[in-house]
Length: 91
Image (cartoon, rainbow, N blue to C red; front, side, top):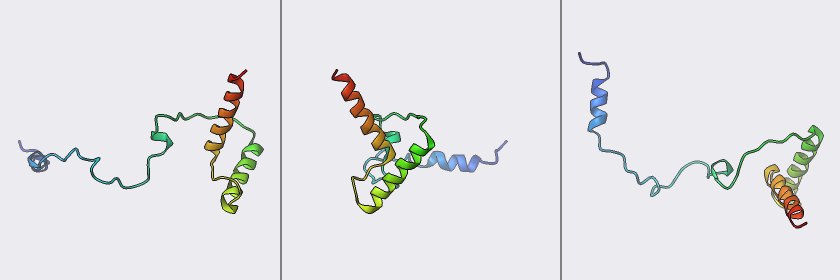
């Protein structure tokens, strides 16, 4: 007995395979971020709400006023933790 989608399946089987040259074609969309970078690991922390709000406000103000370097919460936390680690490893 012929199935409802036999003609679609037959057409698909007769089509040539798609090329594996996905790297040769320019990618569309957003650039790869930290989530797909194996050098980064996702973690979560608990900090007081007031500290988080103050840091986010200061980072946003720095971004839009041009004062300081452009950074985000993740960059700031990573830099502060790296400084702390360097300080404690050198003892």
